[in-house]
Amino acid sequence: MARTELAHGDPTDKWRREAPILPRLGGTDGRGPGDEDTGMSYFDELYERHEDPWGYTSRWYEERKRALTLASLPERRYDSVLEIGSSIGVLAEALAARAEHLLAIDVSAAAVERAARRLAALAHVRVEHHDITRGVPEGPFDLIVLSEVGYYLGRETLERTLRGVRDRLSASGELVTVHWRHPIDGLELDGDAVQSAVAGLGLHRIARHEEEDLLLEVHSRDGRSVARRTGLL
Image (cartoon, rainbow, N blue to C red; front, side, top):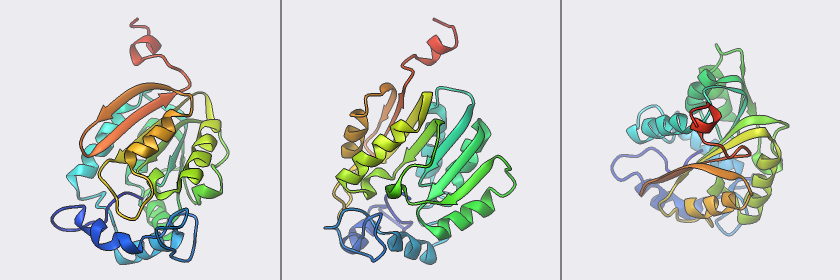
């Protein structure tokens, strides 16, 4: 899941055309923007129309964002990783190279099917159909990645979900969040609002990358920098 469908020209144009009918995660009936969370039916219909709705395999923006995400990770490898909103599995494929065990979840059954095909050769990766509004999978996880998902949730659902994410982190666990920063018509929250909610979790922020288009942060139970962790300081 991400913020804008694949379209020619301005990537936000498609949002502006479709946002008035945008539902919210957690429902199944295609409800409108006044409801709490974006419905699963929206994403299922989206994946029926497009093989790769957000251009993960074609857009330089997405390729670069993945590289930034991977470069931000404080550890070389992680024992247990959870990616929330894994879509067709492109980021999960990259994360798999840094993980002993990876669980990738998405609310869309069609997305899960495509991700499972992409990741089929990786025995240490599981792909599951899971609605994050119904709870965070059992951990603990050393790394949880939440990339361009939070603004599909209503504020109360987001805060509850983030608490669940925090509670699933291991003693040294890390949370990486990435958000599209431009306005999204029809949604209650934007990327900066989601990040404000993340800041309230009481974790240590150890990295931040901010641009006009995106905001990436790394929060951890272990507040040490990479240099301190590796003995350089």
